Length: 115
Length: 111
Image 1 (cartoon, one colour):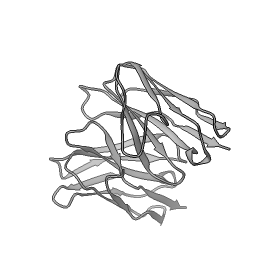
Image 2 (cartoon, chains in turn brown, red):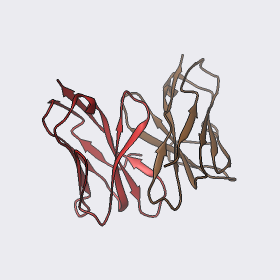
Image 3 (cartoon, rainbow over the protein chains, first blue to last red):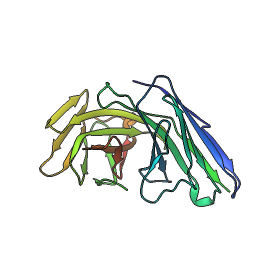
């Protein structure tokens, strides 16, 4: 299965600032996704990152708050904008490879703390 | 939004005992997957069961799927301290490429 390198692994940020999280996949993948995991909770899908077009956001998530880029088939970024303490979570990216059945791979996550 | 629920939310058993976790979902699916997460970090894929399958085994893991009841169970036999983790079911919804996760079960294996 694909291997995802996610950076940074953790960060502590001041409120009002923005953080960009990067995910690099070691092979071309058809689908990439971004999830948020609030403390003690499950994973909630933020959006599907589409290559060469705007991301598809889930209900409750908007582009102004979570802009996403996917310039090619192996790379995507998620920006958490104008952060507040409520944004403190783990953010994970995921990928799915076409032709490999239902193979999904996850990055190791970014633990974000907003102070 | 979450696809469904898992129960129990937390489970604590003695090492060597079996652990059973249940997952329910709401919509038609292509497959259902189980993941493990240690210490709130990366997810480890455990097992996948397709919508036309009823039971699947992998080592000490046994997964069942009942599409009529929209439910699945994960059984871990002969549990070990290293099995202590959070376990999540995730459904690949028909007509969509994304995975939707259940609430998760926190499993603690006591030595």
